[in-house]
Length: 132
Image (cartoon, rainbow, N blue to C red):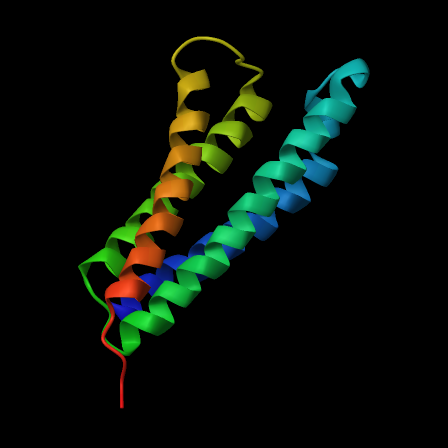
């Protein structure tokens, strides 16, 4: 599982950097000037959460290399789902201008996945037997 989580962390990190560059350079061309400040703030928040949770996923990968447990892998899956839902949902809304319909529910579901991922990670650590 170490290789799987490491590969995902690398890919998500690269995507996060690319989206950050897009939000700085491409987003201003898509959004009306009077909405640009809000759009850039949303993009920054999405990118921040994207990158922070990519680092958390890298932590999952490193822990998985030492063994880990089922809750650790659940945490990793929740981080991936959360990045896709929370950050990806915001990116999609900014890129398309869609601010209504089913897409608006993707972001809070993704945020909930991030929260649950941290809880799963905490419980995984609590249940992990100390090494001697």
